[in-house]
Amino acid sequence: MFRRKPLSVLPVLLAVIALIIGIQVKPLQKTGAPLPSPSPRARLSVTFIDVGQADSILVRTPTGHAMLIDAGNREDFEVIERYLTASVPSDSAGRPKLDVVIGTHPHEDHIGSMAQIVASSAIGRLCLPKAAANTRTFEDLLLAVKAANLKVTPAKAGIAFALDADTRVEFLAPNSAHYEELNNYSVVAKVTYKKISFLLTGDAESLSEEEMLERGYDLRADVLKVGHHGSSSSTGAHFLSQVAPKAAVISVGKGNSYRHPSRTTLKRLKDQGTRVYRTDRSGTIRIETDGTRLFYQVEKGASGGS
Amino acid sequence: MKVIIDRFEGEYALVELENREIAALSRQLVPGAKEGDVIEIRIDPAARRKREAEIDQLMGEVFE
Ligand SMILES: [Zn+2]
Image (tube, rainbow over all chains, first blue to last red):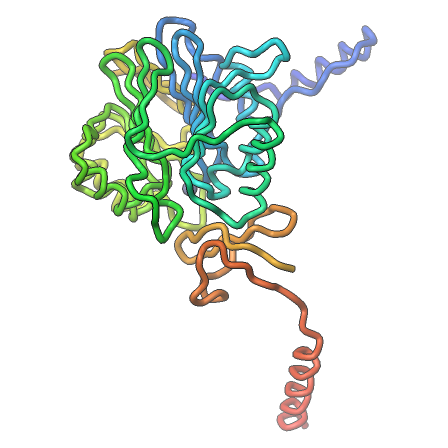
């Protein structure tokens, strides 16, 4: 639907015209054209930004409220910023207004560009699990939060809030304050707009999935952001059968060295009859809903509705 | 140089370099290491000299 356009002669042409009429033009972006702004219609949009082997998800309500979940790797700031600029209203200083920013857990592939996002956006509430990392990347984020005079809301299961009158966000994890691995501290957020739900799981692994099952949460969701880039350590069969998603999105880098997504996970999704979207194949993926139906847009290749 | 383990993925430990770049190290290079561990990577000139002497000795034995 939004294929890359063959623009190669255009920049040259523009430059020539510019030379002739004596003005300067910026060269056009060489990389794939990003998805246009989300539909102005009364739809909630969830954009899975292609940040390679990393996560970054932008939720925008029909009323213009926005939530960013994760901020890619360190080198992904520009691509994320482009989507923020195109999709989110800005404040009087021209900074994108993000009602909520969530760092699912403090690994670099989730908080890599978050310090820059914090420094350049107007953030209402920042949620991070109470989990420390030793890295400078995490330290940079904390320093940016301090410089922005923000306070971090410790994220844990049970926290719920409304993004607007029709959009509710609920945290289903983390359910414990102590884990061996940072992945299991991942904030799992369920976003519900009218009758449609999205379950966004960060890198939560089987241990966290088991805890969510034990707690008896309503896991059912129409769209699942598959945990941990499709690794076999997430998306257990029981968990997946309870979520029972119509569509699943895997945020994964092309030819990554970790062999994500795993065959096991892909097979489980197939057996469940879930339609799978992958950022390594489709680029940025946007799923919109009017509250009852889902609409799909992808940056590369075919897309459709359901 | 001191590097910090950010995470593990499959066979790799992903370490954060001092300039914040991320590099992949084989897990076998850091047996028993955990997330958050600080690993010192440095050139060891004494070990190099020792190694050179050993190789030199061996070459002396096998070369005509
Ligand atoms: Zn990750």
